[in-house]
Amino acid sequence: MSPTTASPPPDGLLARLGKIFRTTAFKLSLAYLVLFAVLASLGLGYVAWNARRVLDDQILSTIDAEINGLSEQYTAGGLRRLIAVVERRAKEPGASLYLVTTPAGEHIVGNVSRLPADILARSGQYESYYGRGSDAGPSEHRAIMRVFNLAGGFRLVVGRDTEERDHLRAAIGNTFGSSLALVVLLGVLGGWFVASRVLKRVDDMTETTRTIMAGDLDGRLRVGGTGDELDRLAQNLNLMLERIGELMRGMREVSDNIAHDLKTPLTRLRNRADEALRTAETPEALRTAMEGVIEDSDGLIRVFNALLTIARLEAGNAPESVSRFDAGAVAREVAELYEPLAEDRGLSLTVEIEPDLMLDGNRELVGQAIANLLDNAIKYGARSPASGPQEITVSAVRADGVVQLRVADRGPGIPEAERERVLDRFVRLDAARTRPGFGLGLSLVAAVARLHGGRLDLADNAPGLSVTLSLPAGAA
Image (tube, rainbow, N blue to C red; front, top):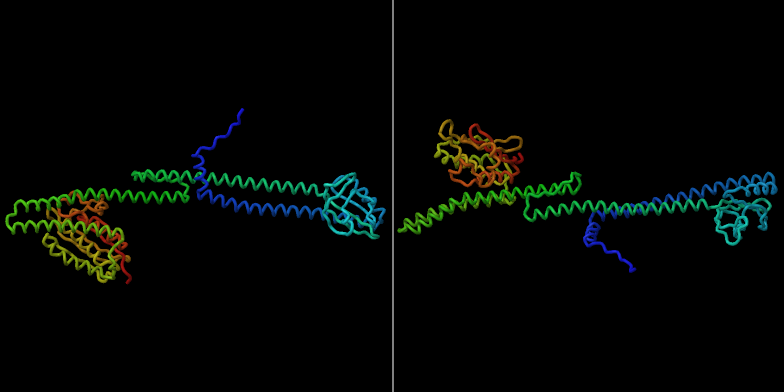
C-alpha cells in the first residue's frame, strides 16, 4: 500500500492566517505574551530557588539539632554511649544518615558504608555521593552532611538523603515548564482569538466601505456597542458619511435649483440677442438690445459671484481684511443706503442702534450681510393687501457679549417649518417665485455668521419676519 500524504491547507486558510498574524492585535498580544512569559519565568524561577533554599535550610537545621544532641551524649557518656545511640538511630528507617569514625578514618558504627576520602579530612558541611549498607559499586545516593570533630580525634558524620528534596525540585521544575508552556499556548490562542475577532470587524468595515465606494452612500458601518476604539472609529466614519450624504443631497438640490432658476434669465438673454439679430435695423435699436443683453449678463455674473462668495466663506477662505469696527455704524450706513428704495416701495425704515457695538471681523462681509437682509425685507416685507403698518425695523444691540443685528418686517413671513430650509442656496418659497431673485441672500448671511462664529435666527414678527444676525462682540 502506497503511503498517503496529507493535503496542504487551502490557500484561503493560509491567507486568512497570514492576515491574522499581521494584525496589530495579534502583534500586541504576542508582545504581551513574551513580556508575561519572561515575568512568569522570573517569578517561577524565584519560587523554585526559594523552595530549594528553604528545603536545604530545613535539612541543615535538622542535622545541626542532631549533632548537638549526639555531642551532648558523647560529653555525658563518652564514646560507648555515643556508639549505642548512633547504632540505634542508624537502624531506624528514614533519610537520616549517621557515621562515627576513628581518628584514622575507620568506620565504627553507622548506616553509611562509603564516603569520598576527602570529606573526612576536615570538618564542615558537604553535599556529596555516599554508599549505604551493602551497596556495591558507584552510588547514586546523594546527601547533605556535616562532619563534626569529637574530643580524642573521633569524627561524627550526620546527614540527610536528598532524594525527597530532589524529587520535589524535579516536580517544581516540571510544574514550571508545564505552566510556562500553558501560558504560551493560552497566549497564542488568546492572541489568535482576539486578532480574528478584530479582523472580522475590520473585514466587515472594509466590505461596507467597498459598497460605499461603489456608490451606495446610504451604507453605514456597524457599531458593535462595545464602546471600544473600533466602535468610536465606526461612529466617526458614520458621522462623516452622514455629512457627505448631506453635501451630496445639497449638491443635487443646488444643481436642480440652478437648472430651474437660471433657465429663465438665460432664455431671456438668448431671446434678446436673437431678437436683436432679427429685428434691429438701426444702430439705436441694436444698442438698446445690447444694453438689455449686458444687463441680463451682469445679473448672471452677480449670481455666480454670490455663489463663489458663499463657497469661499463655507470653506473658511474669507478675505484677510479682519479689523475692529463698529457694527452699529455699519448697520446705520447700510440702512441710509436702502432708505430711498424702501420709500419707493411705500415702506418706512426705522433704525434703533446702540452706540459702540465693536466687532472683530470683516467689515465688508458684515455690511453685505445686513444689505442682503434689508434687500429681502424690502422685496417681501410689504403687506398685501396694504393694511396696518408698512415698516421695516433695523436694530443693533449688545446682549451677553453678543452683538445682535436685527432686521424685521411686517410682510407675510416664513412658515416655521420652512425657516431652516430657506438658508440653503437657491431655495425660494412658492410665494417668492414671482419676485426677482435667486434665493442666495440668506445663504450668504448664514455663511457670514458661521465665518464669524455667530448664528442666524429667523423668528415670527407677528406679523412678518424677524431675522437676527448674532456675532461675538469684540473686547471692550
